[in-house]
Image (tube, rainbow, N blue to C red; front, side, top):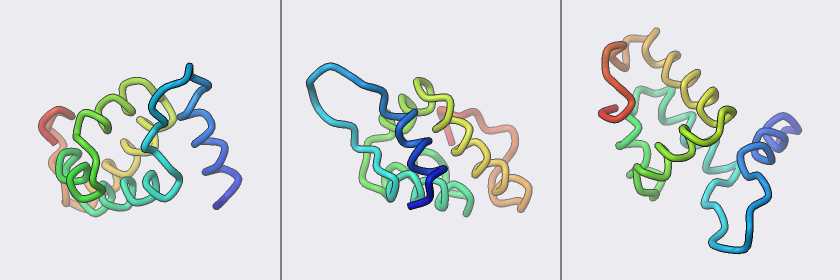
Length: 92
């Protein structure tokens, strides 16, 4: 795992009180970004990686680094014509 990815994961998983641990791992983050970059929608990506779509929506809402990485991946797909520019996050 690259140092940059490890740092981003640290930022994505701030210290939290005891409770259920995050499902987000470096491998999962990499897979999510790869699928989004290939044109998968947010909902289809969630299904493909085995998390509820609300997890991805929440991570995007609460973590600027996660949002930036996933949005960069989606923009790559848009530039390749694999994803529409006009679809809102909730639907795609």
